[in-house]
Image 1 (cartoon, rainbow, N blue to C red):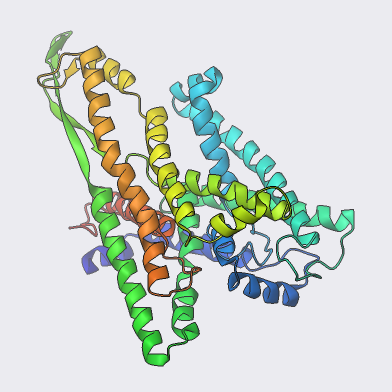
Image 2: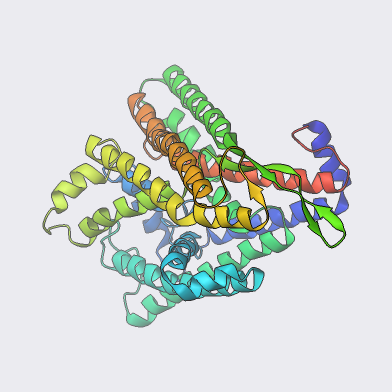
Length: 437
């Protein structure tokens, strides 16, 4: 490990990339603390503190997850990367049902560049919609109920300026993420998401010790217990994320001109968690819709039941629905992103086959069978990881705003592993030993 760090320092090119990434992250965190115009900062901080410690702490924890605290501060980067994530998911799903997008996806880098351009446009549209909803709710006292005077001026001009500022902040965040991808280390958007979550860890950890009413000794015990639970869950996630089923593939020898090609052996790596953290994000977003309805129409039909069962994460109905949605979305996402028929056709085209399985339709059925059986434990793993930390922290009396939830840890571990692998590959290109050797 120490040798790997020393090799990073010795490599001037890699060192510049890491320093550039850290510089962009500093700018990103600065924009996450700078409030938009027309905001009463003192009143806003007071209202945010009251909301985070009140009955709706679970709701505001969900809202704040992907903004690193910027949402409740009404910062320039308050919307964070959520519009971009939502736009990316929408475009990815639309490639299955829209023939034009499916064609672009098959065109390689040029088609992917066009899809990326569509994603940017959709991101800005979603940022305008999200910013309008958020600023309007803040102006009408619907976010921090019973805490008025957050906004100095409720005129149309002032509201439009706030919305445009948040939208511009989303555009800058998108640009910063692409800069990291091109000139830095790791996937830019994933690194920014990693930063927003990790930024809350120190203060949230310390608040567990400070706010516990059982005395200093019990506060320290709870602090260490929560930290130990978080580390154990991280270790379990790392173990599962590295797990994969390797389907062996044999390529037959073939004569092209005067040269013989093929005859090699390889494998198809199918991960246990083939869908990543996307099903958890899907499920969380879907569960947030009834909560948003209850916020907009607090006296509407079913609002009281929604508030009592879906606002906080300690209700059994919420956890049961959350569990079922994660399992369902795992199968749904894998079915639209992994095409066994296309893989079987490509193998047949290049003379590849699975030992003991005939090429063509039997290969397709075999891959679909293995993928279906592999998705079952993967979906259960995701659902358990998403629920167990929350239930454990509630059992030991920890604050629900603590960020060691299942979604947070999955994102942090996934992005961390991906970034380390990228650094590892760049070190190996320069004949250096990496972190994992």
